[in-house]
Length: 281
Image (cartoon, rainbow, N blue to C red; front, side, top):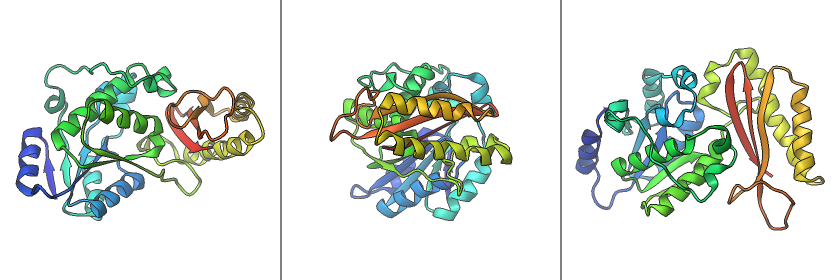
């Protein structure tokens, strides 16, 4: 198990151990790893000669300083979990200075409108921060394949757009959401919830499933109103948004069209913790 803190050292290490015909898989994370992250690592280890995982809480994708401060940082526990997958995985755990130097700002990106929907509307500058860190990590690691969970489906689409627009030669692979037994989507933020809140949060996935069924016979607008009413019954929750969008361009569904694929997207707060989820409709 190798843990590297400086990008120059990682670049040098990868050059020394990765011959030209080898394949490098990459899993970018912000740490506080759970079984969903480990599933990405397992897939990368199966499909590549070498796997790199990054652990870096990226400041430029947070629009809320308190959220950044409270984000769990558990490097020692993360390393132990990574070892259970493979001892040959390289861990890149840089400092903020190693990534940004003295100037912690994000680049400005256009993702052809993908960035203006849902998370983009509610988290100002978020996807500029995501684009900045992912582009830089790809330039450092130069992976053949990179693995992202579908819970952050909008982010997944944006990363695909990033590689297309900037001609970055990496295959982006989306992987299924891992869920707790009660249906709650696994997330690093779940660690901030009380046990009671974690149990109550099962209502998020249950409501998405209910909305999926409802949407088959009703309009998008009627389905959205149904979800809003559903969360009015649950006083511990604050619904930030529920939207039904086209799976490819993420534009809101105004009227159902045949042969179009849609997804439901939701963001809610409980105990001051923001949780997101999505399922295909």
